[in-house]
Length: 235
Ligand code: UDP
Image (cartoon, rainbow, N blue to C red):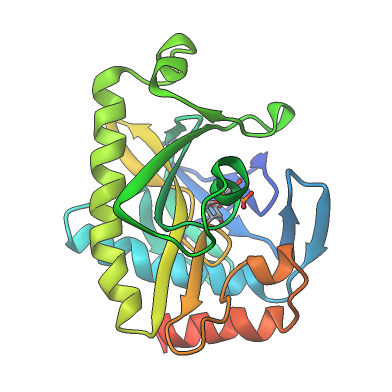
């Protein structure tokens, strides 16, 4: 039995609780949804359950492929036991197709194939609106050392190599996704979550959006779509 201790941190979509072990925490997945730097807020019913289950499937799958993560075990519908890491405040985005912010920023054609995949770094800072940053900015802000940055890049590309075929078999194109990493025993390990909140999926047959873009852009059938992703990944 893992007893839940005090709340350590509350974010937009998750809460982190202490446990009796110093080096383990519980990630609780909420139904709260935000977009556009939390200017848009809402609830996606059962999202927490879906994202917990999907992440609890993907982390062990990645571990088998040699990608270590903070995941220890799924505890229940909304909770996951994880290693306590120090989150590196850099969001690592991997893009296989152009959509979202890169289309606005660079004027690329929506859906343009990006091959080889593109890596972008964003500074995880809500008050600044998570700005895009370069490797030199990361060095300036001392967010990561050059060798840690190389490791982030390497792991992100490897995760893409593993997840692309995983989703393709399930009729989903992995368009782009955001990763967060943490330091644990001096090692960089994957952390946070991998879910329709943090990835973009397009249905291979219909092109339908199967991710948080349904919430961001009011496309409707949000809950149904999250359930469909769950079914394809875990069903
Ligand atoms: N993303 C995320 N959290 C963020 C910003 C982006 O999980 O705070 C994910 C998003 O779901 C997408 C990818 O990162 O899969 C790239 O997002 P983009 O930079 O296009 O930003 P957006 O269009 O969401 O502003």
